[in-house]
Length: 72
Image 1: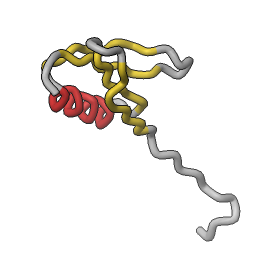
Image 2 (image 1 turned 45 degrees about the vertical axis):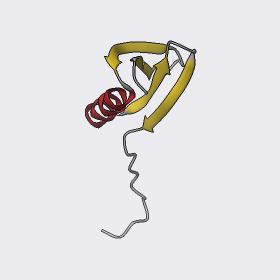
Image 3 (image 1 turned 180 degrees about the horizontal axis):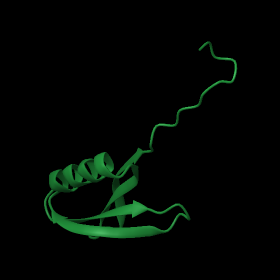
C-alpha cells in the first residue's frame, strides 16, 4: 500500500497521540517498531484515505515480580 500513513501512540487515558506521517505502509510499520523498542507502549497506523486502522502494536514494558516465598 502506497500513500501517506499516520503513526499514533495510544496514551494511558486512551487518547491517541499523533507521532508522524510517513510515506508507505512499510515505513509506518518500521517507525512503529522503532518507537516501541525505545518507548514501549501501544502504537497504531492509521490510513487517512479510508479512515481505517491498518495495524496495531502493543508492546508494554515487561513486568517482573518477586515472590516473597522465592528461595534466596
